[in-house]
Amino acid sequence: MPRPLGELEDAVMTRVWKWNRPVTVREVLEDLQRERTIAYTTVMTVLDNLHQKGWVRREAEGRAYRYEAVSTRAAYAAALMNDAWAQSDNAAAALVAFFGMMSDEQRQALSDAMRIVQVPETPEPGRASDTAGDAGDTDAPDTSSRENPGSAAKGGGR
Image 1 (tube, helix red, strand yellow):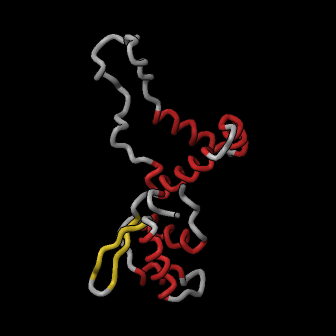
Image 2 (image 1 turned 135 degrees about the vertical axis):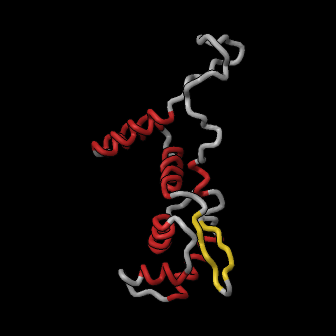
Image 3 (image 1 turned 90 degrees about the vertical axis):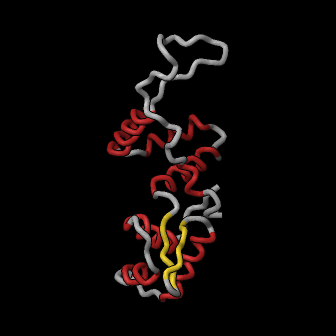
């Protein structure tokens, strides 16, 4: 189960996600120093920890590394929501409570997301399909290569 990122881990990952390219410790440090006093070695340690947890990959460049996010912030958020929901002993009640906390903008985003992921129901094994035509004919989006939101935490946040 992914654990939420710590405050400093989140500040570092926010930059890695926002820049969406390999970054150096120095780049992250300089950006963080606009908001707080922080040492180079602290940022280097945080990025190394994020690498060990599986949140970033790194590639050597001279004597330093460039770090790149393994997954998106959206996938990280989805994994946290999924894990929180899975911990509930009453999933329907948890969803009702969650939806009740949502703003109008969040409810619209949920509605938009539901339209995107809608796929036709697959008939139960042994039952004939109610639709005519080849089983491969569908206007539904291909979800087989869609990013797995839970992948954001695989090996990370533990």
